[in-house]
Image 1 (cartoon, rainbow, N blue to C red):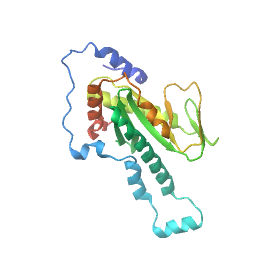
Image 2: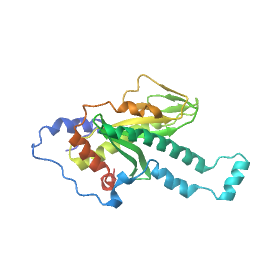
Image 3: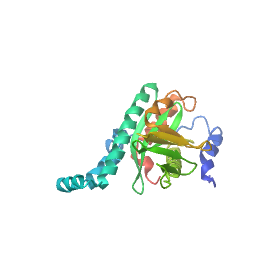
Image 4: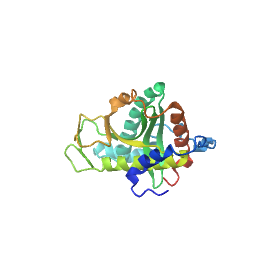
Length: 236
């Protein structure tokens, strides 16, 4: 089956799912430790990148004396943001939610967090902008009234890739909802016309906990099993 409009793929497969034989259930092969993404800590990809770009001790001292920012500063700030969101997401596991962090995609891209639970599947992109004023539009974001950044489009694209990969592995349609999580921001304003991307402040992640009705417990576990396998994301 070929679906010509990708944005309707999940809905089309969901509509056709009821026509499959009742006995047709996907089977997933066991996961070896090397492929188990459940072992990843929040910010795992950034931590590895930080190791690569961190300046020498001498270079760091010089940068501090001259009050210059280094490339590592940006990665370190991002790592702090993902760790904070990771702690907030961990609180939801008591309510039947499952969480994965730093899921690697092809072309050196990763999904910061994937939340799977009774309320559905959320692909979460974390941005750390301390004390900043954030404006979120239909396709872009501005930080302190600066240049537009493609955060919204990126969130949509990553969620679409995630949905395709998990759907392919599970054998049934899995809709993945994009979410932008802003950490440390002083203010976040969202245009009312933005409906398909959820915008969350870091400490408000817990508000997702009460969501329900989207997935049954067995579906949550099946999707989680598929998503935690590194092989699921090859070619995503």
